Length: 310
Image (cartoon, rainbow, N blue to C red):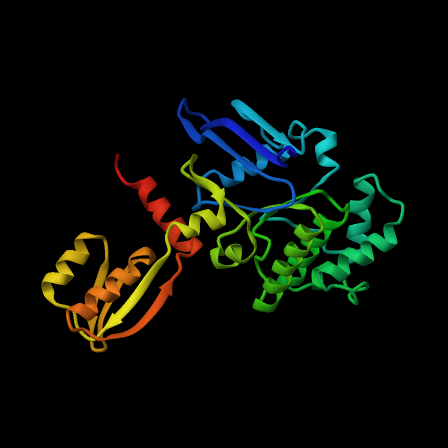
């Protein structure tokens, strides 16, 4: 079995507040893995510890305790850096340069000046910036700058891409272009480790999800497993006897009455039993609709549970 592309093992990190003895807990025994060749979404509310984790992964910070491995290397090791493409959430480029000039500089910094022209033109084409070779970055739109940031992350053909809010500033068409690009990279065998607040987009492309909140691990696993556990079905009936409503509510069904009838949301495995019970009670079943749990549903529930008083 191939080694994980990213591995955190009981990572702990605290910060000292300046001019104070007070300590701030950023990460507490965080453990997760991201397998090679998959898209792993790293999620959490603001202040959850995502940026700290990414900084440790990249070798910008050191953990107080625990172990981190990136492509089989220690974070910050040359062997890891040579194989990582990184896009931070907040970045700035030299506005007096053109896109190709900036990428040429990044390629030189990566120690790969050979075949620079083909790599640069290829990276720009992948993010749909070909044709803007003479335009200064200072004239770029916000979305164009974001595309250029993705191009520089792709430039050295890395095995691992670490992307923080990769679709920030893009219009809907641009966001879809980036999502398709990430799927293409996965198909090429590359690993994508991304952080994003746009959960419906993440759900379209990710294989694995890691959720943190206030420095603690909340859940990590494959997306399909997270969503399968929440499959439900909505049954619309013309009526439902009150005693039957009470009985099904005790079994966890959500029941609401409106002008169209009675809507009952229950576990998918109870669908047949519910429909037969309604028929036996003389009710007409008007519609049956699968209700699939979304990543956003799972995320909000997990975060709310983690914030509940223990």
